[in-house]
Image 1: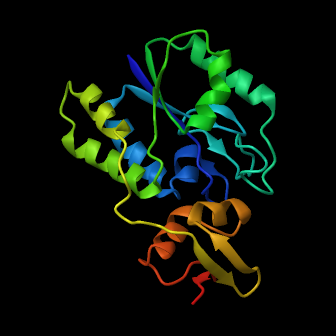
Image 2: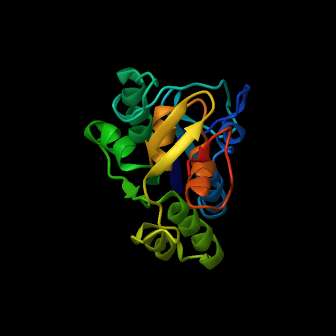
Length: 213
């Protein structure tokens, strides 16, 4: 038995629905889910609001995070009990566990884990992370999961060289930085994946935001 646990995503639906549908608004989640649902015996999601949950569990939208308050502005911190509950659930699982999640999420869990797990490190560039999972899905054949996991974790540069730039919005004004920083500053008004595409010149605008010229 080999089990995958995905980290939750900031991009969510705005209505109550199964967890898989809730996070499917995120393009990175969809790429991870498509790969993981094919190659693992089972998978779960580590939610900063609900703990370890099955993808079929119906949940409501939320805005809590495990990232530091200086990293994700306006997002309340997850309660420590969620981390402890998640670690306890993982400790009691049977089989080999692969944690497909960002390093901040993994580091929150690590001190409370009493069993061996595999942390599948994520790419720093969002587009590269999505591509890595899509490529792993294409290269997968029965029995080569470990090769796919090496491919997912091999560091790579994004095909798009994003630089800090000025974003502007008719309501929120000007913001200087990268798409990820814009998302952190306005978590309820920005989808990070689309903002990244706008920042790298692939879409002209996003929810009123444009690149200031």
